[in-house]
Every structure is written in structure tokens, then in C-alpha cells.
Amino acid sequence: GENVEQHPSTLSVQEGDSAVIKCTYSDSASNYFPWYKQELGKRPQLIIDIRSNVGEKKDQRIAVTLNKTAKHFSLHITETQPEDSAVYFCAARVNSGGYQKVTFGIGTKLQVIP
Amino acid sequence: EAGVAQSPRYKIIEKRQSVAFWCNPISGHATLYWYQQILGQGPKLLIQFQNNGVVDDSQLPKDRFSAERLKGVDSTLKIQPAKLEDSAVYLCASTQGVVETQYFGPGTRLLVL
Image (cartoon, rainbow over all chains, first blue to last red):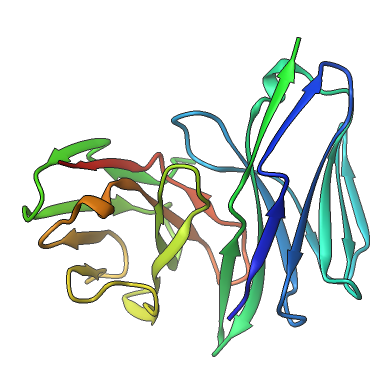
């Protein structure tokens, strides 16, 4: 089955700096890669996603890049703010037996220091 | 639109007791997922329904966990009997179709003593 590895597990940055979180996946058939932000005690919320036919996608301070050959994708947050502090999860989705199967990474705890 | 609803939000039980969680997905969403999220880890899929049929329950500990979605709308997840290692947040999510974005509920935080 699909294996998604995520690193680092924790990341501390100064406010205004950039943060990068990286994920690798094992199944080359994976076709969709969402990123979720989960604040303490709250539900995961989708912040950005990318499909396998696209190499990069940007939404304001957040961007995601995908390298299908190397089977890795990354989340980039620029000009970080204290409210960016949360746990971020990557995920990979693959067709399996006629339905879509989603596998999550273990998460990265991002701390933005004011 | 209303989001995914779950209840209860918190539950504390002793080991070997039984517990049930309820999920009401977003109206019209055919696909429903139950995830287990242990502290410090990512969500792990327990079971996935397409309407009222199970499409993936490969990681569901079937000796103690069961789930149903009888009318293709609400779903219940049951644990019987509970073990200490079942302490986790149980998240329900839904999608309109099999290729759409997942929307998560607030989760049920279970503590087994």
C-alpha cells in the first residue's frame, strides 16, 4: 500500500521567515496531494492541494510543489505569522479498486515565534 | 452549508466497556470516512463507505470495531470492548464524490482508562 513520509516532525521559525515541509510517497499512481492544517483541538482543514498534472500551485503566502519523478511534494509558507502555528499534514490519494484511497503523513508541528 | 457533525465530542470510558460514535456527513456527500488519530500522529483510515456500502475496511480491527451506514447518510462507529490503546480522536470526513475534497468533522476525543 501507499506510504507517505513527512518531515520534519517539528519546525520552529521566526515570524516573517519561510517554512518548508516535505513529503514523499511510494505509489507512483498517486494523483492528488492535499495539505491540511490542524490547530490544537480542532479538525483538519484543507489549505491547498495539487493534482499530478501540475508542478506548482500558489495561494497567497502558501505554495505547494510536486516532483512526480522523485515522488515528493513540499509545502512552502512565506512571511510566516503566529497564526500559522499548527500541525500540518500532507496526504496522497491513489485509485484503488475503483475508489480513492487517502494516506496521511504523520504531521509537522510548526511553531512561529513572534 | 452545514459541516460534518459528530457526537459526542468527548467520551471517557473504562477498558472493556463499549462506546459508539455518530457522524452526520454534509448533505449529498456519498462517501464517508472514519479515521483514528492518535496523539502526535496523522489520521489513519479505519473504514470508508460509498453510500451504504463498505469500500475499504482493511485497517479496521474487526474483532472489536464495527461501523455501519444503513441508509447511506448517517454512520455509527462502535468499539466493543475498548482497550487502552483505543484512546484517540475519531474523525469523520465526507466527500461529494470519490474525487472531491474531504471535509472533516470536529472529531470525538476518546479516553480509555
